Image (cartoon, one colour):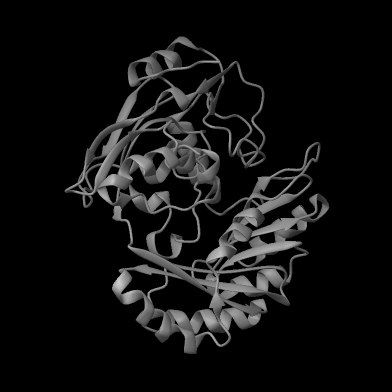
Length: 363
């Protein structure tokens, strides 16, 4: 186990180890994607922690990759700023680098996107010890290759993230959620009405145990003075809506899954999402009706067929919880861009040192 605490130690750790490397953070996504194969050493990034520089006026922060996002939010709070990412595992201590590497996001991705949209600069170490930097503290910086987007969702197979520069947003004065009991099909109709109006929802999620019955959650945020009027304007679009602030914990519980569950993360065109989810034998569902991102809880024997169903709709899927002892595929059919993915891997890590097994059987 290697425990670097700064960029130099990280580079030395990569250079001084000659075999395969696994990259580990807080461990909140250790069983996501393909299982890590046998490695000669594990590089623990949690020692790479803390803010490098915070520019409140520019609303940017540079932070070491092993910093828990929860801790970063606490340090930004006195400045009334935050990283607008609410992935469920942030509460469990997920690190900034781990959230980038796994491509994770939460319900407010509807308004703010994922880490891919929030990262404006990155410092990384390649498998041969090369230190590379991309972007910086300027939000519109477009110089050079955008390595941050390349690493988003790479599961530690292309490089080791050392530092990340993030764009920030103001902490809203107030947040409020309206909840409507409805089927998934009905929720899709309501979601279209919400998105077509002047409501500016920051999250639009349906959750349920079957497509026939569940709850649509619509979250607003903004100034305290305007919130009541905005809620009054939204209620006619959501007949029977009640306060739903306490329902997000249920949403997070579905995303995390439980012992024995297989949890699949799906991305598909939003208009196709209800049909895809209805075709899956899911035991629990969260559906981002504005983003096309969903989480489904399945039995292990249903995972392969679920991958095929999603791929047939032009979507992507990845396993985010694997039942203990179950042999299930983390990925669906190979994407059309597989040759590009393999070429990038060959260019950045020709010896295949980093994260073996994460993209099995693709590469």
